[in-house]
Amino acid sequence: MVFLITSSLLGAVNFIATIIQLRAPGMTWMRMPFFVWAQFVTAFLLLLAFPPLEAAAIMQLMDKVAHTSFFLPTGLAVSGGELANISGGGSPLLWQHLFWFLGHPEVYVLILPAMGIVCEIIANNTRKPIWGYKSLVYSVLAIGFLSFIVWAHHMYLTGMGTKISTFFQTTTMIISIPSVIILSCLFISLWGDIHLHDTYYVIAHFHYVVAPGTIFALLAGIYFWYPKATGRFMSEFWGKVHFWLSLIFMNAVFQPMFAQGMQGMLRRMYDGAANYSLAKVGTDAIGGLTDAIMKSNITISHAAWALGLAQIPFIINFFWSLRHGKKVTSDNPWEATTLDWQTPTPPPHGNFVAQPQVHRGPYEYSVPGQPKDFTPQNT
Amino acid sequence: MQPTTTHSHTHGAHEAHHEPGFWQKYVFSTDHKVIGIQYGVTALFFLLFGFLLMAMMRWQITYPQKPIPVVGSLLNAVLGDVAAGGIMSPDLYNAFGAMHGTIMVFLAIVPLAFAAFGNFVVPLQIGAVDMAFPRINMVSYQAYAIGGVFMPFFVFTAGILDSGAWANLLDYRDGLPHHVIAARRR
Image 1 (cartoon, rainbow over the protein chains, first blue to last red):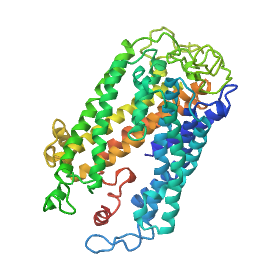
Image 2 (image 1 turned 90 degrees about the vertical axis):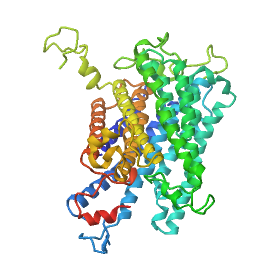
Image 3 (image 1 turned 45 degrees about the vertical axis):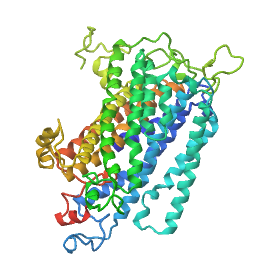
């Protein structure tokens, strides 16, 4: 874990320095693609959230090897009624606070880059400027800030007190505002362009951004940037097979879990809550789980395994296309506006043939009066 | 250091335009694009690994106390009594749950979303020749790869099996009297 945290911190510093210092001439802040903004905020989240976890991990390690009691309270009663042989004075709640101070920003670390990828792909595939670029930028900054003051909403059942809970409930509701703004911008950007679905496999992916959306967005990103990295396309047909099977099975896995949860099936039960059904006296007994809900365990599992099999076309496609994929005929096969498509394919060490000069914003698609429906940033 | 290259330069002839060898080009690269792809492939591997842990847990939930097909005997051979007879014990279920969460969050999704795409795309999109600190970038990847291989390895081989999903990253089992551990378990 220490290795991973070190890796994250170094990476975060690197991204912040790169984005601040190494932008091409003319690449002002408000001309940066939204993906870069998302990475910028994510880097700050990693930089500020990981050190508390590292400190907490070291304190836990000290509790273990040096007999400190950072997280062990005085008078810890143990099984059999004996007092534990520890110095005491610590608090297990402290661990939870320190963990979730990382833990909640971490979930935004998961989703923000995915949102950035989705934004790039939507703008490119709809051939329209992204709707509300500035609101996207301000929203992602707001999320970055707010994500540090919502952590205790993971801890309502720990007896923090109602006033503290109220504070965290409020901040949690506030953070949904910028999140919804981002999703709204992305959906409005799609408006009227649904018919373009079958032109690219990738465009269909991002509809799912709200649920297992991160992984779908990442796969979309792989299909999208694969031609730039390798000079060849992945197979669109097998991409569609992969997408539709994944979409169906992903839903078949997670939809029934809503129903299971609403009937009160607890998680982390290694027998799949079979003990509940043993306690059940009749089909409608309070506290029992209906047969349908118990049987949905079987459906979910088979869907999950099928979801795994559905990744086989992707894995084969990924490696097969390295050698046999259709070759790109242009450095900018998706006719995109951002600078990543204005390089040789694949880009050599050093990236650009000449230092690019940036003249415009990142999403000038279908601008009236221009010769083509895309205007690269460096023209 | 470069046994696989085809050119015939002798040692000491490493001028600036030297075409890098296999190791320099693909393993110890400081090129942000290569590092991005390294992150991506490694993270996809962990994504699959984390998925397979979940797939085995789903078997136990669906058919409690039945031996896991195909891999059950392998688990028994590698992990010992926690998978006696190829059947997943409660301890193993907890360990798999904790590792599934930890692997997916820290070893799969974040490296793929932030590090892989970030490395490959960000310098290109802002018009930079590389990241600000290319060597630190390389070290970041190596630290991730080393930590990523060792963490699951130690968890499974050292018998550190604890519940608590990804929120409980370390375990006190060795450092405290056993009855204290018993009280801490949920």
